[in-house]
Length: 569
Image (cartoon, rainbow, N blue to C red):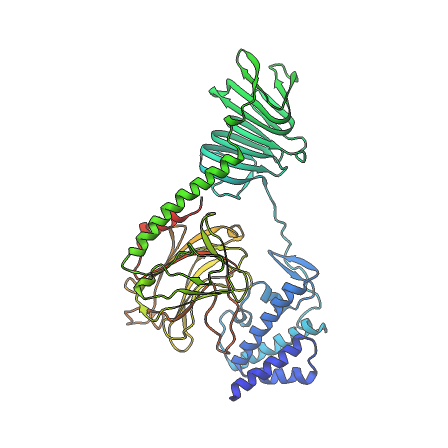
């Protein structure tokens, strides 16, 4: 055991005692001695402190206060608060951090004092005993009244809003459905199936106005006081299931009671004058210009939830078949290096098949910890990553000047505590890479520039927010040394283009950018280690159900085709 390793082993034991509140004054003094004038030791200390702080915050927090958009426990040192707010260790030291011995030592002593106050509970002049909310607490506001639960081939017009994604919150306003079918759930519990073309105004979380079109409504007992208006009628406090149809510009209105009791107020031309009608199960009424007449209820004339389920499955099957044809074309592409479709594999399969393996490039993947689950469609498979140990190991020995990385990914939790590795290289050679999602939601492609830990980072704008969780996203990054560019794509559209550098950034005479070097790789986790030998936690919490690597730069039309063909509806 060499001297440097012995020092880190000793420092880890001392920091463990400090975290467990069992460190003596002699131990604290020894920590200060080990850190003084040693930047590597200070960096090791910061990494260890960050890990302890995040562990305590996750498993031991009892009382919380709001600080901006972050939540932290009350008894917290300023240093730990910075960790929790997402600051990196270098940002805590200094935004323009450099490992100068005198500065690192001073920072180490300051952070030790803060840690003592946090871990041992003693007062300290550098950190108050309780963290006060210096920023005003922000209360999140929900302006919605209903939720778009599902859709089949839906096309929306220029209404007050356009809810393009399932699961989207619907505020007050007019929903114009030009074609297709949508399923809506009001906050009160009432459910609706709207058939296009229709116009529905959401007037509250327990009421709406059907301007035109056809709608099926299920009103549970919990939705007491629900009402649905038309230009001529008001359906008050129905219980059960009914259908409403408005055609011929409002001159023909039908109300069908499939189950339960439906009360109808017929609006008169005279103010405050209303006539009350009621319908029982199996009855319906038709209102025309020349009067009203009772008819038999016809449930088959309105789309049911079973119809939606069947239509969704049929649409999903069609899209899946179209995607399968695209995959066959991708397999036949002469430049394809790897194609992991996560398709046609059993729940106990521990090998991720590379559909392009016949080209003897990338190996099949060894699945470690992950479990098989549903992908973008009910009939599509994917792998779920939920623990720090979950990963897929692959291998390919080679390097390339031009590459396109394409994947479908779903985040089940925001990357607040650590960045997330989508695909990373175990090698520490020049050209080793890491494809990640940052804490702030940016996509980053990183490549090692030299053997002195110099790394070039190529960041996209912020693409992942709180609204991105539990939704499928198509990401593409193109690294091109010929064009000296790095491009990031989201949902088939280019969102950033950056200059690709060589071993030195901004060199006066450098002509060539760095090629990418492969080796042992990991999907959904970080394959490398820190200089101190520790493995950082950078696992994906979510799902992946497609990963393709091309040995060329795809054009914008090809990127969009992969997205458009493979996107879930």
